[in-house]
Image: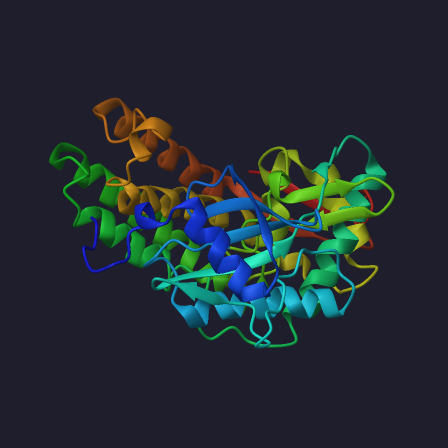
Length: 345
C-alpha cells in the first residue's frame, strides 16, 4: 500500500534532477536527461558541459533508510579501495556520496560501458569466481548494521506472515500456501545453523556482471546488498539446480579459492536459498502492487492461476530440498575439480 507521507517520485522533473546533480557536483550540465531502465529507483544519464557522462540514481522513498543506503556505498567503496571492479559513487564537494532533493536521496556515478558476461567457457567461470572472492574479502572487513540479514528467521519467517496477513492472497489458497511455506521454513532452518555471514552483493545474477573489453569483469548494482552466506553470490549464477550444476560450481570455486577459502558445507544452503528467494519475491511484489508500473510488468500477478503455479513451484522446491544430499570428500571422491559430489537421493 502507498504511504501518503512519503515523497512522490512523480514530483521529480528532469530539470529538477539536473539542477540537483549540478549543485551536488558543482559542475554545469547540459539539458540531456536520458532515463535508464530501473523499476525500483529512478536512474538517469546526464551530461556535463565538458561532455562527461554521469549516471544519477534517485532512490525510491521508503525503501531504504539513509543509513542503509550509506551501508551500500560503504561496501562498494571498500571494494573500490581494493581495486575490485565496481562502479563506486562519486564523492560530492562535502565529501559525502549521498545527497538529497525534496527528501529524496540520490547518488551520482561515473558512466561505464560494458556487456553482459558470456559464461560459455571454463575460463570465464573461473575468472568470475576470483572476482566474487575478492568482493567477499572486502565484504568481510566490516559489518553492515542497517541492511537485511539473509537468514530464515530474519527474512523468510516475516515474509511468509506478511503474505498470510495480506488481502492479496485469496482465502482459498491461504491454507496450502501456509503449509508449504512453513514446511520449507522448518526444513531449512537447521541447515543455516553456524553458517558464515558477511556483507554480500545479494543479487549477483548474470545481469549484474559486465564484461568490459580490455579490462575484465565488473560487478554492478549493489542496491540489494545484505549480510548473508557467501554462497548466495554464487548460486544465482548457476544454470540449474545444484545437482545439475556440479561442473560450474567446481569452476567457480576453483577461481574463488585463489583468493579466499570456501566452505564446501555451504553448498547445502543453495536450494534453501532458492526457496527463500521465491518467497521473498512474492512478498516484494505484494509491496509494489500499488505502483503505477506494476500491472504492466506483472500482468498475471495475483490471479488464481498465478497462485496455483506459485504454490506448486514451492512444493516442488520443498521436494528438491528434501531430496538433495551434498557429499563432500575432496580426497577420495572423483569429481570435477575439487571433488564435490551433489546428488539427488
